[in-house]
Length: 465
View 1 (cartoon, helix red, strand yellow):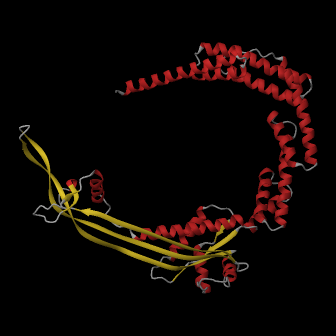
View 2 (tube, helix red, strand yellow; view 1 turned 90 degrees about the vertical axis):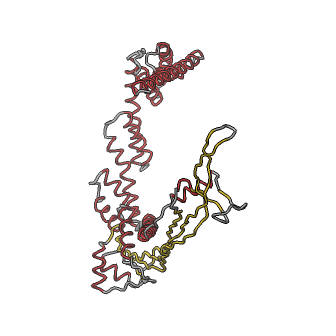
View 3 (cartoon, one colour; view 1 turned 45 degrees about the vertical axis):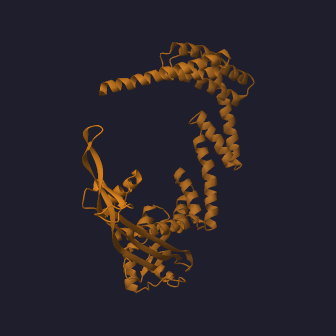
């Protein structure tokens, strides 16, 4: 099919679908209108026009049902207005006005007498004052959530009304500031910072919030020095572990974690000749933390590491190669191709390689020597290679068994089923190279780093200071 014809067909399908939908909605709307449910009928008529604005039946139906539905809304408003029920009056009018706007958006005109607007303006002024007076009273009584809800409602009804914007802000600022002070006094600096930051964003000049926010952030921040992991194994890669962990922690972009520069850490270790032995009880943590300007130290050691270098085994296998032979068919009196099988040998290769890693790590407080987090990571990565090598026509290779290459035997079998052939073809396409050992080491270290960084971040989130 030509592109232009295909595009025309697609457009025609869309038109037919729209016609079907608009007719369906119109029929449903007519039934609703007959039952006196003009609000629901109006919604369906609008859905019909949404699919096809040229639908005359839907437009006529919307004109009739829409006016009747609008009259019902306006009646509710006027009853509430007459009974001085200002909240009910305000929201009944707003619903009527919203409905009117929805209908007229389809270019269907409805009658909406202007005197309703005048009555609404009178009622909304009274209702706004009621909300304002009640909101200020609640604010003075320190019932902040309730007052904030009322000020928010005022803002919805009349943006910029009096000083509601500032009062609404104060209904948030005052309780947030007080919560921040309480958290600060109990040493929960991270929580305190959250409250003070909320206040600061609304009013940076409010009382002493700027200074309290700064101090809270400073005290809540974990300055971490990631120490080189001890590695007594023959494979030296401890520097990579440290780099991975530093990268993962930095990538987390946690504002309460600051990492000591790695070069600075290693310089102090060299200059002060700090022992890199795994700190079982945190004895060296205080001194190291003071020298490095760190509140916590992350230390670790490789407990075990093993590498199984790639090993490959080969095995000669019996099989068959198919070929075509022309044979004369005496019944049909013509030459035909017949599939034959010749006995062959092919080689199957199979091997594996693996890396394992076991690391113990600890997060230690430099202030108290307390072990904050302690865990052991164990992981492994492996790779397998399995493929078939055949010097003949590999496309025609089949698995099978035979006793003698030159003599037929009753036990000879050619495995010609689809699944058996598919298995041979997959083995012929099998990968022949092992995954580099370094790649598996990198992945293991990445898994370790993710685990360590996740636990450090979890500790930071859950700590009470």
